[in-house]
Length: 427
Image 1 (cartoon, rainbow, N blue to C red):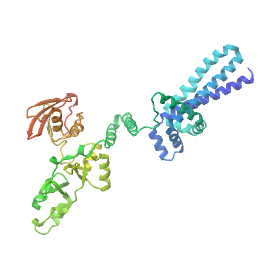
Image 2 (tube, rainbow, N blue to C red; image 1 turned 180 degrees about the vertical axis):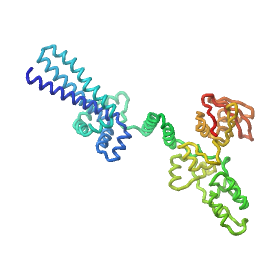
Image 3 (cartoon, rainbow, N blue to C red; image 1 turned 135 degrees about the vertical axis):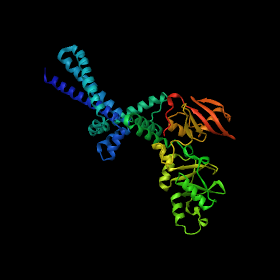
């Protein structure tokens, strides 16, 4: 064996090492956690910023890696073939093909990729300083290849989209939450999904309807107003005057009681409305994420909800929005779900004004929330009539029996859930 053979063998080894570099880079950069890299970059890690910039132009990155990988593999095979042909004659072609296949697959592909897939972030950070200038050198070639590929795709009616849309990014985030939210972090997974859902739901979906609102007539005698305020389980109570739709203020029971105790004159001269704050009105179409932000900015805890005509629809509180994220929060004055009672046979007697969303959240049901806000509204919509007491229906796998009706309003229903989705009512 002459010196030329050993030089060729050394060159082949160097090219296989380059192949391993490209293979490990491809796997590591594409498999590395985007969230972890972003966090490291925000902490000042320069290599993480390099990897993020490389991933921003993924077409150029993949094109450069593939071009470089194939270039060194072909060059290594050509050198090995030439060296073996010179050494053993025509049989060297067979030896080179067999030997280089094993070497390239084992040491140029499987080994580096296996290492990189188990340590993607560490590997990508280690290779980024070398990979970045290599990709920069290969940019003219990759740009040409991208143009050719784009032209071929256009002839087939396919348009390349280099960046993910907002919807795709949200789906990717939801998928990551599901993927990593198993076991002990299951509750955290549910809350993270709820945070994303705030942008999909409106104030009108979770508000307390005006028929279920606790309100006080400001025209009543002061002692009666104070008595009703103290008897209420709520800290903030809307005040109305002349008609229930005319909300004139939000009464804070602490301020009311403080003022009432400090009043030295006749109780009849005490004015509860003087201790009420001006009402704040918001459209029922406001997204929950926006409402939460405004609650925070205004330092408010309650808002009155109106429709497009300015008609009072209900009210929403900061607690309502927070409960959409963390689940129901009960204090000593609240029951698990007002208006719902579990019967011995496993069915539920439900007040007609209870919302479908509340039932789904409490019992993990899957009743449609888009068709109607309340359970009574859902039954009327599905039945396409206003049912009479005693009528029974089956919708979406659930049984519904009308118990009471007041005029055109269903006030009480019996709901029988499928056996697989009928949990115990929390105490």
